[in-house]
Length: 281
Image 1 (cartoon, rainbow, N blue to C red):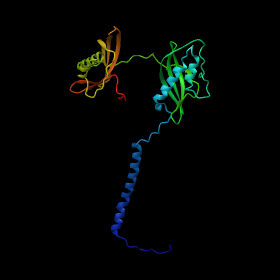
Image 2: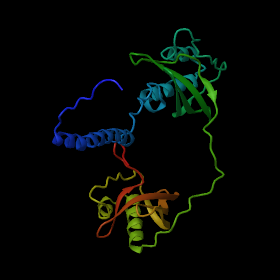
Image 3: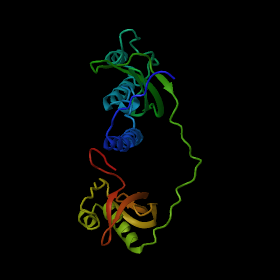
Image 4: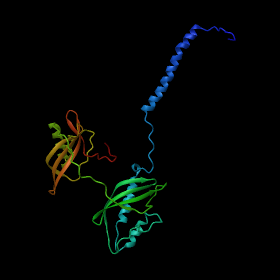
């Protein structure tokens, strides 16, 4: 072995300090890494921004535009056939036929009673709005393509399509719920629904919480009997099925869900709907 060994004097105190701080620094580093990993697990990844054309962002004006087009498209007047094409020109892009692809039967007329948008499907900058319409005594389902440009202007860029109705299933069974066995809660629910149907605002207020928001129906009914009081959601929502009678002797079977709250006694917080303009729970 060549070379020489050199001895360097070192402080015993310094060696002891390095021996203690080395593992400590390593522990701090490991802790920081673990903390960062824990934060990544606890904090959810930022949600991707919704696409501009997603159905959840379809505005009321797009649906109303599709309904308005459907009313013009599905109706015609035998005495003024040119009026329909004139009205359609406000919706159609220039390279489509002026009658939007539908030539009404000669000498006949048809009126549209009502329309409502039942579904939407976004396809890029185009939205297909399915409109249900009562026309000529029957139901028609029309898929209307609506395009919205960068300035917000709307148009029908392609011919509409006749489609089928919403898929329904009537083979299931009715709702099975547990009876409310609290006699005091049953009494409050029955009294609240009776006053609600009769339009007795002052009497109804006695069973409402201070934060309750209730809008009375425009047509008043007389409560004849209560069929059942059940739990729609245990401890929170009670369902009351009743028999009621109108002033014109009409007979009604109705079911109301009441948001109930227990304080010194039972109170009603909401009846069936939240009538505020912005909606709610």
